[in-house]
Image: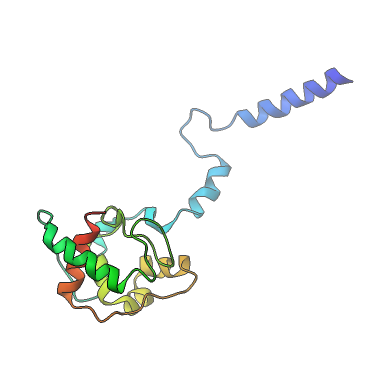
Amino acid sequence: MKSLSYSFLFVVLSFFSCGSQGTGESSGSNEKTKSETPISVVNQDFMANKGIGPVKSLTLGALDEAIAAEGKTLFDGYCVACHNPTEKLIGPAPKGILERRSPEWIMNMILNPMEMTEKDPVAKKQLEEANGVPMISMGLTEEQARKILEYFRTL
C-alpha cells in the first residue's frame, strides 16, 4: 500500500513539475501575478504619457542642488501629510518616480490632480490603489512644482 501511495505521489509531483519549465512561457500561476502588478510597473511607454495639464514639455538638465533643497522644503510643507519620500503612505512614494513617470506627468499630477485622476488612465489606477483618496490641489505654481520635481531627483 505504501509503495502505491509513493508511486501516486511521484506521478502527481512529476505532472506539476512539467509544464513551462525552460520554455520561457508563463505558467498559470504567473497570470495572477500579472493582474496584480502595481501601477508603477504597468507595461506602457511611460515617457509618452505627459499627463493632462499645463506642462507639455520639460527637459531635465543637470541636477540643481539648491533648487532641490527648495523643493524638499516645499515637499515637507505641502506633501508629507500623504506622501513619505521613500515608502507608500496614503499616496505613492516619490523615490524612483522618474523611472516610472515622465517629468511632465509628475508636474501635471502636482498641478492638476483632479483632472488627472478623472481622465488619465495611470492616475485613475493610482487613485484606486489609494483606496479612492484623491490627491488634492495644493495651489502650487509651476515653479514650485518644478522645485519639488528637482527634489524627487535626489531621492
